[in-house]
Length: 358
Image (cartoon, rainbow, N blue to C red):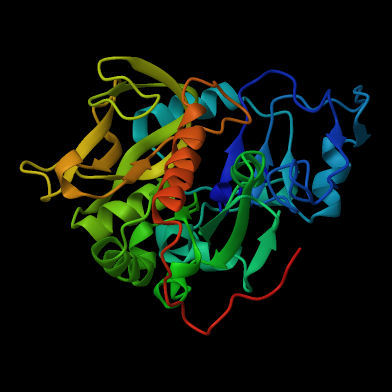
């Protein structure tokens, strides 16, 4: 519910009982282990919540309030007493669907016309959830990684600072090329909505990939931005891939990833990159979804001279499987290796500096 990738969505929970754990306090330290929040962001990001049966009483040693009071405090509508599995069967037949939450007298009113429903994909949701000003985390880290924030989950940032990275988080459309020589690597985060709204970021990244030789890693929306920068098209899937048990097949080996192995992954995406033949020069498919054969990852080829990876799933889990968690270690290790190789050389950086330290 706090993952910015869920911005604009109505979440339907199919588990029979929701809320029995309650909601924890959402404040954590800013240090080399944490990034200021316990959950994935400061606020509830989804538009509404639908559950079959909500627990009025919660019981967990970290809980400070119930699910109901938490939603009420954030102004997020929620409804219980609904056959959520019937909704699930409907969605399995017709795909992701626009909807509304209606109670009381609203239920008896005529269903709105199709054009009256708000379609979140028509808006740039990334611009709504991305940071507005740059900020830094763990500034004493041994390597410097820039993060383009398309709607970052806190656990992505946590996964970087715990690997001793000094992280500078930038707005999604920030001109990274003006400051890129300050950094040992670039990370592109997850985010909500239609990636074509972020073409400005893809075009800036295309220049980065052409002129810059340092490691780049993208997750979810970040993966799609890398793909568009490489010349691939993104499309809206009928159903999307969601959940903590999506199997993907590795097509090539890279770092901890071994070709031919199936990895169980955590996913939440409505859009994907088109599988094209031939693939753009210098690029190759990295992962394929075992259920629907959609592209789940791309990477630069060995002979391209680049170190670029993009994956549609979430290696950092939280929640979900840990099959691919070492991809973060792979990325940080590549950044450290590049820094070591270039130590003793000097790069002229722009005088423009990202501001604000947390």
